[in-house]
Amino acid sequence: MHGITQCPIAPEHTYTYKFRATEYGHTWYHSHYSLQYPDGVLGPMIIHGPQSANYDVDVGTVLVSDWSHETAFIDFFGELTGNPPPMQSNLLQGRGRFPCFQGDPRCVGPPGNYYELNFEKGKKYLLRLINTSTASQFKFSIDNHILTVVSADFVPIHPYQTKYLNIGIGQRYSVIVEANPSGPDVSVNRDYWIRTIPAAGCNNIQFPVKQTGIIRYFSNSTYTLPVSSFWVTQKGQTTEPDDCDDEDMKNLVPVVPKSLVPGDYANNYSSDTYEVGLTEPTIENPMPHGNYSRWDIATLPMWLEWGNPTILNLDKNVSNMSQELSIVPEDYQNRWVVLVVVGNLTLPSGHSAGKQSIPTRHPIHLHGHDFILLAQNDTQWDASDWTAADAFNNMNYNNPPRRDVALLPRNGYIVIAFKTDNPGPWLIHCHIAWHASSGLAMQIMEDQENIERTIRDKRAIQETCDAWNTWNATRNVEQDDSGV
Image (cartoon, rainbow, N blue to C red):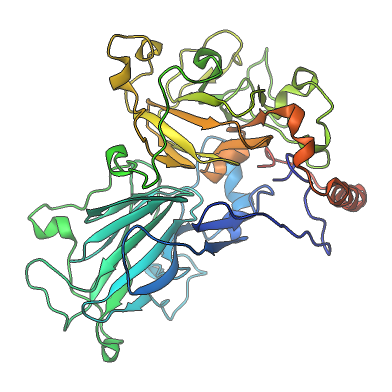
């Protein structure tokens, strides 16, 4: 992570990542250098291991994403100036169709191809879904086919069935689909649409295409399009659901149980409550790095130093580091730490003067850990939830969901906890690319005194920084965002 655990990799240089796989499942890697990942610097990764239900065919990873016709660096300035750019369209496995009649002169035929899967009746197919979007959440479904969900992020869960799946940015789900269509007017002699329906409350796709893939039962049907309809509209509803929600917490039950005893955490939740907002420049408090409105979760919007990462400054006390690095110390060893992230502001003292609440949803991602999700609610946060007589019922302590991305509801809150058993400076950020680049991120300095002993090759980190700083000294690359 540039500016935190390493420096950027200079052009014509390489960096080898070696890590011990302690979890299995699928995930994705992507650049964290500014806005490179929305422009395509990303890829899937599978660490093979058992699933919590049986299947016959592993399809591999299936990437769900949005797409813009401009570079992310151009689009980002729309965000800074108060005009968040709409994404133009959506893709499935990098493929999609855009309506050229919309008048974009760069749009020329022939139309793109749909992503296709060939099914054989009776077999069970494992799909490893990943939302790699810049700014969009989706509902994934296959007409007339039930999805059996068996994992969320890196955590195997007890299987549950659904007709469509909410998948936020950065989230991963494994689903098993049996090639046995159900519902009215079904047959294995026809084909079916795969749908990725944009969640309207989470994003703005200008020309969404909801049918983005095809399930084919016969390869000779290649040149025909399905005529199937969405599950809900089959029941007489006139519109497809496009609400912006996470999967229900009660469905995400880990196979390997882990529970938190109420009160068994080392920190004070009130001092670890973080409010997401938009900091506006004022005459009294102009914003550094350009007088733009910027998102933040801490006291100030984050602004990293690419050439001087946190990992090389462990000899300093956090209080002596720049406030713009947004570092929060959690100096505990092997203890539970609780964080509260709030989407509706009460503006306590210490926050920037121009900070205001903007009601929107944020997919919150933590590096370095799975977290347990104690609560996720779309009502205003009230600290008495911890102290009320029914406090136990307000939090899910008994084998709660574990994952590394959870949706912060509009005007609501999430309560998460993790065990400080992985010393390091870990980023927590919104996975909407514009918001992270704007500054909606902070670093958790976990068990600072023991971080040094976990570094296997500090020399390689320093060499990467030397190469970057030498290269940048003659180019003077302007940092125009948080660096995340």
